[in-house]
Image (spheres, one colour):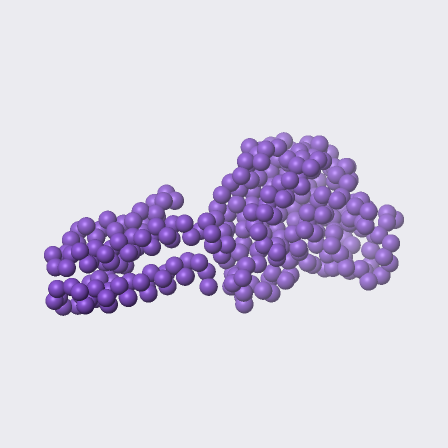
Length: 296
């Protein structure tokens, strides 16, 4: 059960118990208990405007100014308003609802520790053991400076799987936003088919950067990741694989299919348009024959 559900349960219990108690103290009035609950519910009702929650119900309660037992009915409105305030702070503590935010982290380069520092920011913010990649896109200069990044992650929580989008741009800002949530039953099969996030990070950080750059002549290099584990067979000279030493080598299994994840390496102009240079690089593969993954 999430913190938010506990708050709502506490609101209902306190409203009912307080209403029953005040029902014994008030002046005679038909259906007082139901009227008290109405004021309690009115006090907690809010309306979101531009990211802010306006206590519209509590404000409207002034329009229904009671004539009989007014003091006791106001207690109900105040109880509702108190829990309205509590619910405003729940997202700060409840990991079941991922709070959107941004972090200013500055310039990032794949050639120094700043990429690892950005990764540590992400792992601390997401704060989960089970993190998998749905898809990703990174754009670098030839020198390895990160221009833009987008991760779409699937994160396992206690009661659900959260889909979280993480973006970075040239302003040096790292942004987080939850875009979807799947229950454990419907999301488990898809979650299991995705690659572990740390495998993706290793494919980028542990591979010789110059090996990526040498494949294209464009000023910008784009790496696009598909998180699904899939079957690949040799198609043309535009297929590569990352070997055990972190080097990009020609795909040499011309006959045998390979289960792997892939990176689509593309060249971009400075304006972000494709130059037509496009290659497939395999990593995280499963090969049952010939384990010497060296350049052929």
